[in-house]
Image (tube, rainbow, N blue to C red):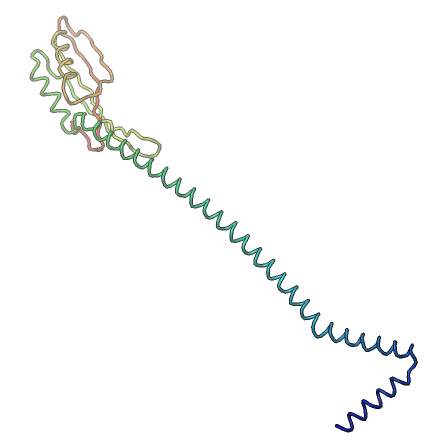
Amino acid sequence: MSSRFAQLKNLQDWYQALSTRERVLVLAAVAAGVWVVWLFAIWEPLLNTSVSVQQKEQRLESEANAAGNSLAMQVQVDAEVADLESDLGLVADEIAQLELDLEQAMRAFVPPERMVGVLRDVLVKVPGVHIVSLRSQLPEAVTNGDQIVFYRHPVTLEIEGRYANLHDYLVALESRTEMLSFHSLDYQVVEHPLARATLKLSTLSRSKEWLGV
């Protein structure tokens, strides 16, 4: 302790012996030293910390903006997907209704396996008419794009009789509850009053099964 006190006493004597100009220079040097110590010990770490905080804030802000944009985009995508699913649901409902309507329309036609029987049954009810020939063709697919919607089962029927009898036969066919499609009629007099009528007609079905005529 006495040694340190002696050093301080010597330092004080040395400082008192200095001129005024020299004292100012010494004080300036000491102040500069204190400033340097404060700069490196306190200010620089604070400055570095401030810069680090600013950088972190910028990074967080950038991440928040990116997250917000991503969320907004996801919301938009979800909304578009929901709209598409709704549209698909409506289309599916329309297709189901069309399928139902088509099935009902098919049931209105004579089933292919009964077509020959229907033509003969009507013939029995109309006297004076007889069958010359009854020929069936292969079923024809009716398509919608690549999808087969139904099949057309065509036949060619030739009958003979008087004009009035042939007329009655055609009226009886057209009056049936079950439908047939008439495509063409060719009428020729064979030997008066006998005539021949050639009918091309068909029925519709979802089945490809042949008529078997």
